[in-house]
Amino acid sequence: MKKDLHPKAVPCKIIYQGQVVMETLSTRPEIHVDVWSGSHPFWTGEERFVDTEGRVEKFSKRFGDSYRKRS
Image 1 (tube, rainbow, N blue to C red):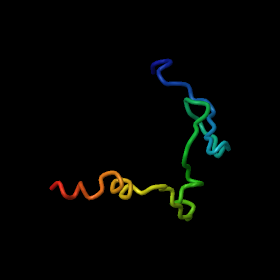
Image 2: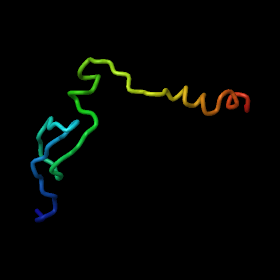
Image 3: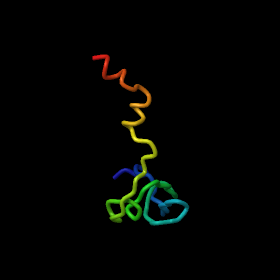
């Protein structure tokens, strides 16, 4: 087996919104995440609406009916 082939695994803290939510091993000492299982709607059962402006509305505002009339 070759020596020094694999990177060193160090204790790692997973950080969500400034709070440590999990500790594991990784090649990095800290990992900052936007979503984790404790906050994801699928696992918590909570329904959240994150979309500030829908894609269809944004597209319609930008192009209007001109997109449909081109064809």
